[in-house]
Image: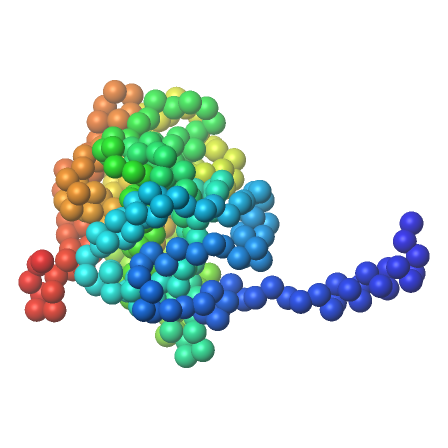
Length: 312
């Protein structure tokens, strides 16, 4: 049993313990705009502990091999010019986190003048898996058991998918393609935003014409218990395939929607990879869906245009 003295000492120690740095402040990450992408750094212990505590996971910092550093650099090099500019100017750091829930995360940071910057967490499992394996594993986390669902997206390293997806989030944070890329972070001038965007009525609620019944039961990566039995995999794919979303994951929110539209365009058109979802023996190719392709051309294609508007 602790005495009053020991309790007082413990309280004093707790009060005098230094607070961890502010993860949303640029000074907490360090930034050298002249350093080349991907600006790979070892995640600070305080930041790793914060993410591990929030997600309830025993995360570990991961040190990339020289071969993995080369793969990562190549993945960042393939961005369209406007996106590359954002990454050059606003990406503070890339942290590799072993055991990360999901494939990656991109988070906002602000400098003293309220300019938006970002940092990324990437799951190093993407160095060992292919894009097909990474995307298949992601979709299968929706189900309570093994599901008859597979994504075919080529044999490139899975980290290429993650970098493309997270780079789209970075661009969205800085340029507000969507009203805001994070429901917990409203850019300057967006306070009290209530209007929808494109096919979305709200951040995580599509307009009725774009919605589908099973969308409300999507729980990816163990963030919430899976709500879908394996048997409805075919039904889920059939419903999603009639929607205007590039992937099932893209129907989670307007931020994920934009990121997945970019991934679809990048994988199929830039890298020449297939991208189809096979459920119950039936294949669905989102690039062949007129609504999906039209949205990709409207929302993503401007990234490939020079200042005159001519497509690169």
